[in-house]
Length: 288
Image 1 (cartoon, rainbow, N blue to C red):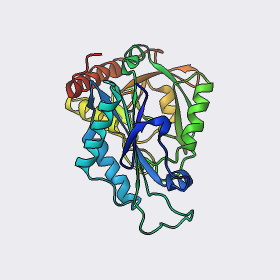
Image 2 (cartoon, rainbow, N blue to C red):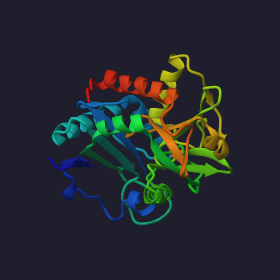
Image 3 (spheres, helix red, strand yellow):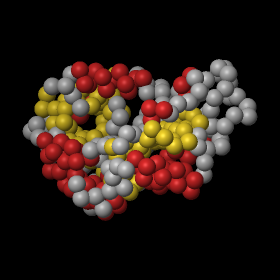
Image 4 (cartoon, rainbow, N blue to C red):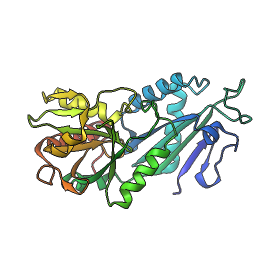
């Protein structure tokens, strides 16, 4: 079954979907998005994604998007049409289409686009056991990284540089401190076994997988410290790992070509991996 899309009330194949060339999402990246995992046909952390979307819409003064119940109905119908049990639901809301001008146009409706595609979450399980590599790069993004906008060019360039280096992810560094990854949140384990991650601020996205992982860690009496950490600390840490919607947790076993810790997943990331995937299965019934 080909990937399917919803655009402003119409469902159909992605190949035949489209928006106006004057859409502000295309012209200015004046738009927000969410990526929601569905496994076994069920959405993972739907309410958290919806909260972040609503927060972003309010911050950008985008009004008129469908309400929560209507958006859930559209999402469920689209996933059912896709016939995929495991995949990614992409939601994008732009300010709408209007004559190109920087100021907000009056009297236009937002553009709503959803797509549903297959995604193989089972590929993450062997990566969890083996770990992945990362490179470090300067963080050259704008000052509101807490908003999940479609203005992703710095992340695109960083992810491409990581790919060219044979790495899974790029780790962003600003003023010597690790912020997050190209499409992930970042963590280290310090010498005392504490989980350290950058606090929520304008410098990082308030990740949904991040929120879930930290809740699980605290519930298990694992110590969490939300503070910035430096690239030097990351290189010397016994463990590094990342989280995202498409990679609920992955250990980083090499950074900039050098091993992290012993060069294999450590005990903290292994324990967290068990808890995170238990939560995924608990929410969705997934048995992959």
